[in-house]
Image 1 (cartoon, rainbow, N blue to C red):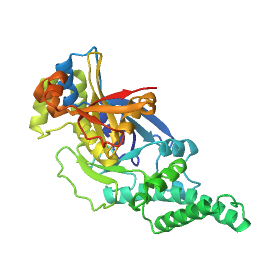
Image 2 (cartoon, rainbow, N blue to C red):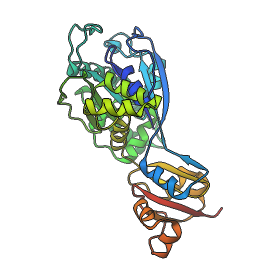
Image 3 (cartoon, one colour):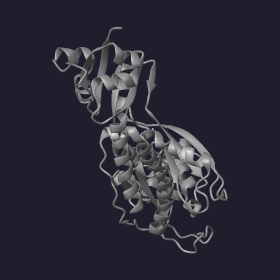
Image 4 (cartoon, one colour):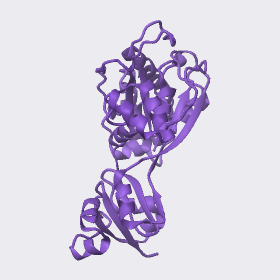
Length: 363
């Protein structure tokens, strides 16, 4: 999963990026609208992986990972002055979703470009840039489809072209009404057909309202599908993350207690990101390796096998399956088998969060 941390200048997005990655990238440095990217890959720490490691004592333990990118170069008015920079647009189009940081904190040291702090206004401003970008893409494709149908250019696949044109008409109407495309109810086939267009408002969004250390949480009226909203005290969370990175657990615990922080922002945002993206974890275990894997909720056993290796999916026979809870309660695979808790599942079995599987295959 690759998520882009986005926001207007002075929103504190690099501060949030540091909090999520335990990094120390310089903050408060405006790129003046220039495109730039910082990238960090973080482990998705999961206590279940730690427990399974303790049970199997493997040579290697592997967590799933998330890539965060801190994206500079977004600004108001880009859509009205020629659109986004091509490199910026290409990068945004390649992301799986966005972590959109909206500023709600006051600071004399970091004045807001608009002269006042208004998270709702800033959210709407960046939303507008994404809407305008998508509208350009949709208009171009729709015009091509219309002209092609009028000239008879789709003789061999006219039905498919008509269906695509109808879909893009629907997209155009939504964008013209200033509705993000993620608010539309699209079939899985339609969503798949749109992947190559890099439509920005189709991507899931986690909105982080960046509040001050002593500021009350803010409730935003921001009601969209595939969208979650949370508050974070960005500066404090960055400092806590850096204490964690240094291994200063005593100071970390003290400050978390003092400020009433029960969960570091990295853990919170990862959890929310999994919910937002509709993801879940399953595990493979053994003496060589205990490993966590990520699949979409609703994925089948053969789809999970493909995540591990394409050969496992091609030669899939069955998946020997148990649950993390049963495995930990009973104390080992032999005990799980003796207790009748090791199931033999076929290709269409729907993987559940926390499943432990062993794929049997033959090529």
